[in-house]
Amino acid sequence: MKKRIIFNLNLLLVFVAFCTGCVEDPYDGVVSNERSIEAVTLGGDLVQVGPAVVDRTEGKVTVTVLVQPGTDLSKVSPQIQTSYKSTISPGSGEPVNFAANNNQATYTVTSESGKTRDWKVELVPFTETLLGTYDINGLVVFGGTGPEYGGGAVLKMTDKPWVWPASGGPEAELDNTLTFEFSGVTAEGHTYGTVTNNAGPDGLYANFLFVGNPQTDVNGFYRRIPKGVGTWTRNYTANTVTFTFADKTTATATFVGPGSISLGNNLTKTVTDNAFEFTLNGTDDWNNIYSDYDKFVKKPRRFWVEVKKQ
Image 1 (tube, helix red, strand yellow):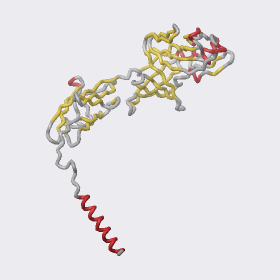
Image 2 (cartoon, one colour):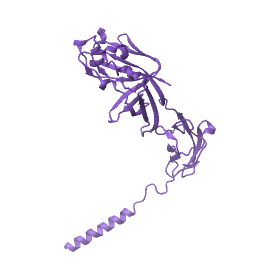
Image 3 (cartoon, one colour):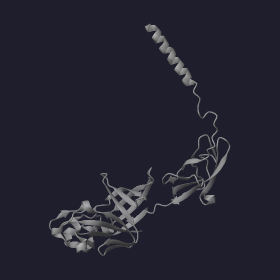
Image 4 (cartoon, helix red, strand yellow):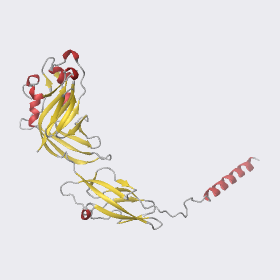
């Protein structure tokens, strides 16, 4: 009896396997009409900024490409992914002269069924405006407890020389230069590179030591840009530049252009050229309101490193 049960079970398994093998592919014999571009990736030495944007309604693909001196768009070899079982002409990876037609080229995608659709692929030149060398020409703080009560102020650090070291205070930073160089683009489309903070002719970096009463080291607030060589990452969506130090700590700024910044309570900050604006997180100190100690040490709110491109 036991042998018969085992035999019947084996027979059942063979039958199930046979029937499974007989199941038809639901797509067998179906010919695809799909003729779309799914993705485009630039080849060669070109640097693509973010993924390509595919507009299926308009039949257009937009690819942002970093343009630097010497960038050649006459022999671009994009890798192009298309619909299942479709073909594309010019072929994926073939060199195409985008420069001849305003950085655009037309591709024809043919479906398995033979239907075609023309797609326009456009390269949008992008320039990283941060690159270059800048002179540091100002360090400005907005700070103070209770600005609604007159406790806030916008102050140049160098306007208060008595609260900083006699040598090597904030003024030491004003002959420094910042040089931004490009390294690449992250998978998220953020540009990044190295930043060199050159100490300038005096060979000094600022020591942000408040020498008033009580003496307090506030480098944690104001050493926002690395000494020597660090790295930077720029997020264009958030309009931020993040500096990374040798110890992997970071400081994030907004890169602002010329204009007036309203701070509330009739306070403004005017940027003449450019500035890196940092948000600081001080602590209200009502016992020291209106003092330099309160504005620079206890409740700094924003900090600008003013720069001018050479």
